[in-house]
Image 1: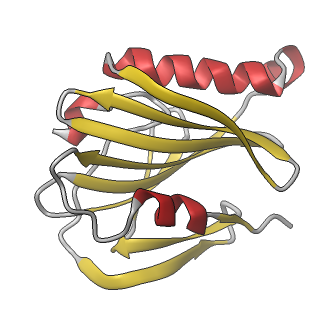
Image 2: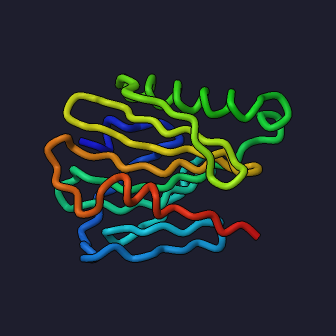
Length: 166
């Protein structure tokens, strides 16, 4: 199950949502500074560490579209380069799910550095883009069974993510 095998603190718990929205709808969060198109109803949750996850998934728990936002500590910002923060996030994600890194590409959103990764784990695959934006780590991801039929391609979801910083 997705919610049991992808338990990285940055990934947070995945909750399947029963409402299908039909065509993707734009979700905007002024509070968290982004917009993205989701094919299912979005639910927000907060972890004990204060990270926030906006997630949308199918009833069968075989597809999840997620955006996780973590605030980076002043110490991390002071002591690590952005590229090292991203590499640490990738390493943690792969180790926590005991998956295999399928690919990794350096990317940007505006002036901000990021990485796009694919993690393979048993019958699931995760495609994720992470960005360090000022003091935040944004992780935009699709986690799905390799057999699932996606209502919106992973690429379309990842491409729909926009920063709306003030």
